Length: 464
Image (cartoon, rainbow, N blue to C red; front, side, top):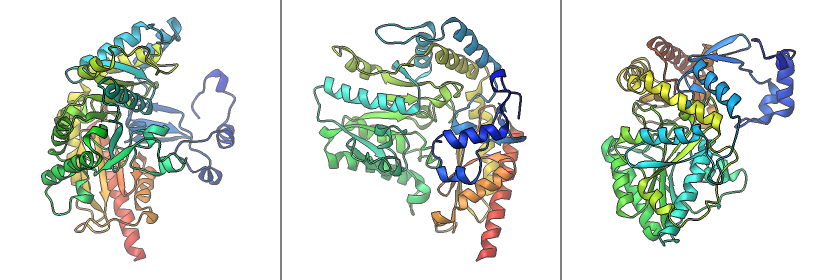
């Protein structure tokens, strides 16, 4: 293993794996899997690559779509060390702040869409969404419309893993596993998933039809009972579902018509991943509230934000009294300093513009050229540095392979064996690479996925 700090230097790989198997309960992991094989320990990373156990891997997922600025940036380590030595911690309760929280809030508002100027700082995307839900409730109480409580979400949605945010997810198991299925009044609309659900409609027609599903849901519940609609500009976790261009402007029109708040979950899409600073700018709509995390600090440290429009803030704040909400490390000086430096570097290096004008278009072109002619691949969809390879049993009918065959997992494993990290989800290979990725790495991604998809397809043909 690579050199460890002094307090870790005596530990061997085998000891660390044993400690982990005996004591570490992993997120989104079957504990039985760790009984069969030890965990893979990643102990260093630089640029677009992660390393461990003498293996180096190109990370086309940027962790979990979050290490936007790339691994190992000394500037961020220096910022953290400097602030930690000066102000290791103080809270932001009771009208107290610190220079870094104040500056980060201002920086976020300066980058945010126009008339979004109030920022609540927290620690994770789940906390940011949970904060948004509470502020939605306060908003309607302050407006004298307390019956507006229902939240509309969509199929294939992902908004977090706390009790409240998991209830919004399209993956129902994330709530049902714990028995918390009726925590909130959650209504579901159709996702703008043209490939699977568009049928014979054009993408533009289907975008309008999917938006109408939101309107139908509002009308079925009664507009007087619906508080907000929440959606990711691009539905990331469940398959990089890129909506038709007609979708979001129509959803915004519907929300305005029926007096329903529009919450944009920009935890993944925020800070440049779609080729604009925010997904709202890529898809032509404006939210009342947006949630941010991942790319805010490139996940060097946990930090998140909930941003309010001026209208929402002006409604929520007057006469509110004590805001009964917050976290011990909200506005933590070290995390805020790192996030602030991260945003400065993204600006200084022109990374958002690079995605829009160079790497985003190149990524789309190379993936489509390498993969769309393969019999296993039904569709390649890309927006900025968010990409999906939809696998299909039948390209003409868009029929999927049964989930139990785990075709997508086999492709992902094939890519891993060739030195590439991607994320299999259902029958979709998902990628969200770091913003610093270059053409050579994109070429490698395309070539490796072509080989992996071809190998899996050939194996399927031999079995049939």
